[in-house]
Length: 279
Image 1 (cartoon, one colour):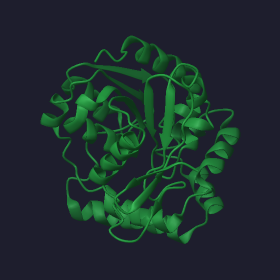
Image 2 (tube, one colour; image 1 turned 90 degrees about the horizontal axis):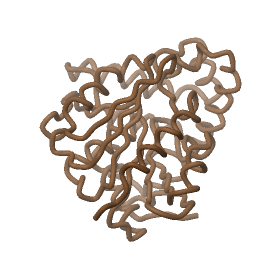
Image 3 (cartoon, one colour; image 1 turned 120 degrees about the vertical axis):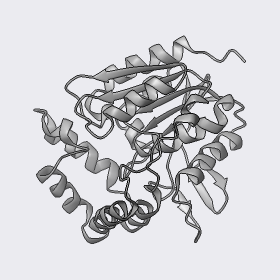
C-alpha cells in the first residue's frame, strides 16, 4: 500500500488516473472511501490523476506515537508531504468538511502550490464555539461517544439524531442505502484515535479573513442548503477569497458526495476543466 512519510506518520493515499493531480482530503470519521465508494474519484480519474489520502486518526494512516499531530497545521503539512513524495510541484486540492478546514488553512500560506482549491461543506474556522470552555466541553462529550459506542451503535445514534451532519440523508427516500454506505466507509476507523483527534483539532473559532484574502488560486465552494453549520462559513469564503465561486445545492445536506455524486462530479469536472495549470 502506498504511504507518504510526514514526521512520525505514514500517510496512506491511493493513486489513480493520469493528468493534472487532484489530492482529495475527507472529513471527520471518513477516509479515502468518501471519494472512492461514491464514484467521485473514479469519474475524475478519467481525466485527472486522483490521489485521495487518509488524515491522521483515520483510515489506514499510521501515527507512530506522540505527538499525534491531530491539528489543522499538521494536517496541512501531511497534504504537502503527499504532494512532495509524488514529486508534485502543483496540484488541485479537493476537500470535504474537516479536510477542508486543513485545506483552506494550507491554501492561505501555500496557494502558489495549488492549481485550484475546492472546498465542500467546510469552514476556515476550526471551531464554532467562541468561548473556549464551551467548545472543550462539547468536544469532550462528542469524543467520548466514539470511545464508548461501537460503529453499529454510532450508526443507530445517527439514525435517531441525524442533525446536523446527516440531516440531508435522513430526509431522503433512499436513506437506508445511504446509511449503509456511510457504515461501510466508517467501520474501519479507530474510534479511540478519532476521540483523541476530536479533542485536539477543533480549537480555533477565528475564520482568518486576512488569510482568505491571500488565497491566490481559483476556488470553488460547494455546500448543501440543509448544511446549517456551514452555509454562513461558505458565504464568508465566497466573499473574502478573491477568485471564488459558491454553489449551494438545493435539498441537500452535509454529505455532498454521498447525497449528490452526479451533480458534484459535473461541477468538479466543469471547474477543473476551466482552470488548467498555466504555470
